[in-house]
Amino acid sequence: MRQRRHSTSTEADEPAGDGGPDEAACFIAGAVSELVPIARRHRLETLAFLLGMAKMEAEELVRASHLNNAH
Image (cartoon, rainbow, N blue to C red; front, side, top):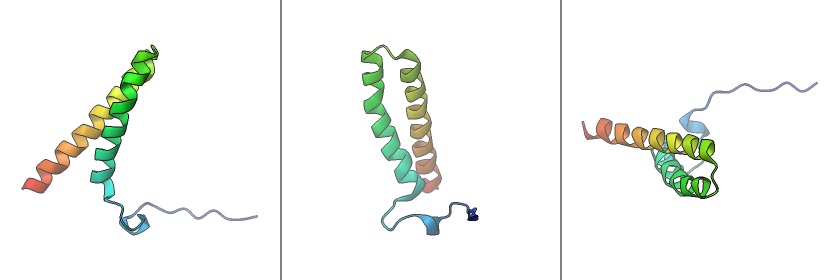
């Protein structure tokens, strides 16, 4: 029986060239913003709502990061 290794995510686990959580949040905000209108167009209201919430959360993370980096 194979044992599974339990590991926690660290910066060392990130692939080379990965911009980290700030860049990921920015990318996710942009990607999700393209999905929201598609969901709305097809009347997938719950999905559109959840994607909108994901977009707002990603944008808030980006804003918070910029505020923290400005100080």
